[in-house]
Structure formats: C-alpha cells, structure tokens
Image (cartoon, rainbow, N blue to C red; front, top):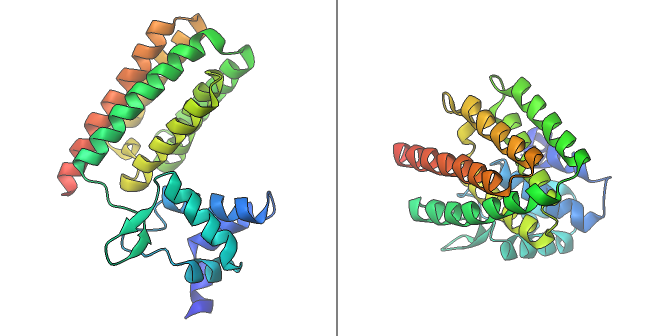
Length: 232
C-alpha cells in the first residue's frame, strides 16, 4: 500500500534531509546516491523512473537526470532482466576497485602532505575525535566519519579530479558490502592507522603519508575480501 510504505520509506527520509538545501535536480541526485551508499536500494530492486519519482513526489525528469549521472559515475548500471539497477560486485570487482583506491588515495596523501593548511589539519583532528567517540557503538557513523576524513585529505591535495575519483570508487565499495568497521577489532585498528596518517601530514612527510594511506587501505582490502568470501 503506497501510503503505508511512504511513512517508513528510507528514501523519503533521505529526501527530507536534502529537498530544501539545494536545487531539485541536485537534491534527487544526492538522495539516490545516499540511498545507494547506505544500502537502501538493493541489487534486487530495479530502479524505475516512475516508481522513484512517486516515492519522492517529483516528476520523472530530475529522476532520469539523476539516474544518468549515477550511471556515468558507475554506481548503477544495466542489469540483465532488470533495466537499471545497483550492480552486484564479485571478488574480482572488489579487488580491482581497491587497487585503484590504493593508487589514488596514496597519491592524494602524498600531495596533501605539502599542501595541507593548519585549518584542514584541525578539521581532520576533529573528525578523528568524533570517530573515536563512535568507535564502539555505531559502525555506520564511523564509516561516514572515515569517509569525511578521506574527503578532507582529498581537498588538501588541491586536485578536484583526484578527489572526485576517490569519492566515486570509495562509494562503490561501501554500497556493495556495507562497512568493514563493524568487524571485531577493525575500528580500533583503522583509527590508529588514520592517526598515523594524520601525523605524517602534520609533519609534511609525503612518503610517510603515502605509505600510511596505502597500509590503511590495504588492510581494509584484505578484510573486505575475507568478509566477501565468508558471505559467499
């Protein structure tokens, strides 16, 4: 029943957070992107313009534009028998995406070491402090803060295209499998890795920063693949 569903529809909840803060087209895009990233649009669910438009109470045009944009970013694609959908990722996909992330995020960390401002370092410290507070209670919140920490490094690298590529590949991993930060012991270790990265950035040590970023992501890749095979 449409009315009953709309009350608890997570897509509507995301929409209410964004509908008044930007243009209609951008709000629809951001809502669908967040829904994919948070797992509210599953691999089993075809992304039909008419249905999504009805759930958001908008016309089909901004939905169509958002789906086209998400397709270009690789977050959705054409699935056999389903039309457009969130694609499933296998172990090879996950490994390839992590290889790309290792290269991109290590490069961003090296660049940021010589370009980061005092204000950006302060913001990074604040994010890690909030992450520490969420460490044992909220893996999703911790994942969002970890993503924010990575975004700040991307911004400090002063390369917009590099930062956009990092966000794109990070989000494709998160929506596919959820977060690894709920795995026993991972949150504490990940925070230690990020603190080491922050220390290297504060010291202006490009090689140490790149190495810390690589080690952080390589451990995440190892755990991601382990969890993937356990669920298979």
